[in-house]
Image 1: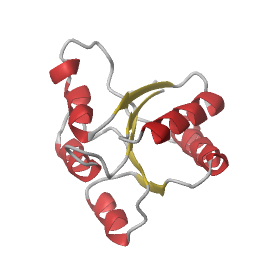
Image 2 (image 1 turned 90 degrees about the vertical axis):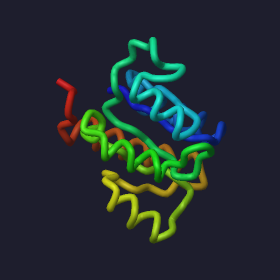
Image 3 (image 1 turned 90 degrees about the horizontal axis):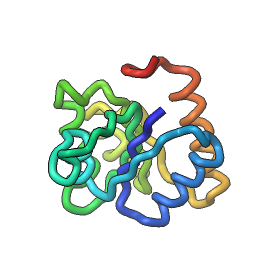
Image 4 (image 1 turned 180 degrees about the horizontal axis):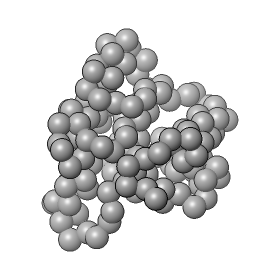
Length: 142
């Protein structure tokens, strides 16, 4: 399974990647640092125009990022007929009701508030992985 992580925080990127590596070592993970780079990756434009990467089967999206935040990126993804099939899990520090409500309104598949400890992050990643890898059928995956 190919996961695309969009998060501007270096520590959060490291911890999330490490949690997936420990829980699901065969998972391929691509990482981008903001919403602009996320959209370039998905549309194979800008620095990714010559990339041969496949579209991800799951996007983990932080809401609070520079240049283009996760809210804007989510709306773009879900309004693009070539991208809207990709499940998007919001993984963010926010627990504001407005962010939860709007994320679902704009098409997010799940909303998860980042935990304070690595142990809790490992539990969340195990749950995400079990659900998206073993329970549901994801478009584009055999």
